[in-house]
Amino acid sequence: MFDSRETLTTKAFVAGYPIKHSRSPLIHGFWLKHNKIKGSYQKEEVAPASLPDFLTALKSDGRYVGGNVTIPHKELVLSIVDYPDELSKELGAANTLWVEDGRLYATNTDGHGFLSNLDERHPHWDNTNSAVVLGAGGASRAIIQSLRDRGIAEIHVVNRTYAKAQELADRFGPKIHAHQWDALPEVLQDAGLFVNTTSLGMEQNNATAIDFRSMRSGALVTDIVYVPMVTPILEKANEQGFATVDGLGMLLHQAVPGFEKWFGVRPIVDETLRSLVIADMVEHR
Ligand code: NAP
Image (cartoon, rainbow, N blue to C red; front, top):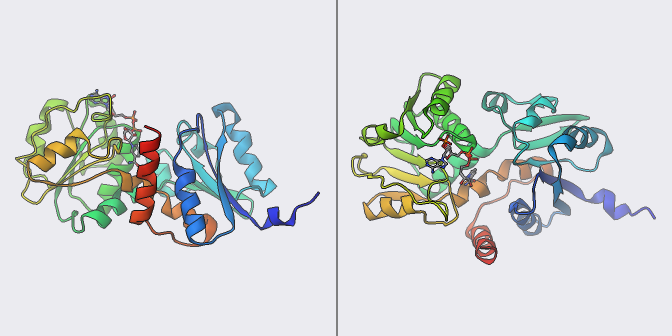
């Protein structure tokens, strides 16, 4: 039987492969409830070979107003959507999609999430000419792009595999400088921001002994890894007297633009949401 309630519900999705561990439904579910919106946000397990059909169907079947794509679809999606924006084209990856007049649009909100987290938790962090980014993987790209667009004059990228750092310097222009791993102490001197984007410091890994003491006084150290919340890198920076910001807020803030696009309300990242996600991390440790 036709259920009229079904047509009144605005629906969004997160597609990945696998998708079981995504925390996005928890975040969007919280905002839907908090804002009393009759909507849903659900997981879709989509294998890479099925992604073109899944996305093409969205344009005509009206099932979803849009959604997120996550690993391993962030790059592939660019060749399928009708209108990727300039940000996602330069980055070579998108994570947020929406349908408009039967066309599929895409952007990338990871850089927005990164900057908003720092703006919220350590205002004026961007009052510096020099930033050091450790790592040159997928997440690092969005962070380098966002730091450049924020106007940071010199961005030093240090990576175990030098060629990948060089690739990002070539992609994002003359403000970006690629370095070998052993150049880290040198580039840290007088830097105002250090960002870890490597998986060093996640539960099974040991962080290398980074000494932050040559950084500018008042410099900020942040780690986008958020399991554990206080990573060995943040612990060390704290011990050496530097301000730190954890990576959980990046995850929360990157979800804001998508929610606003699909459901028409700009959601708030607050302590209640942070606590909810932390509790979920503890439960599923
Ligand atoms: P990725 O594309 O696989 O890149 C991994 C990076 O870590 C590369 O630069 C890699 O160096 C480096 N690396 C890995 N193991 C290393 C080791 N033992 N020693 C030195 N360098 C090492 O991963 P990603 O997608 O960028 O994600 C990186 C981390 O960020 C993950 O832990 C992820 O959970 C986290 N993350 C957090 C958020 C958030 O919202 N807070 C968002 C995205 C990602 P090589 O190039 O030499 O291999």
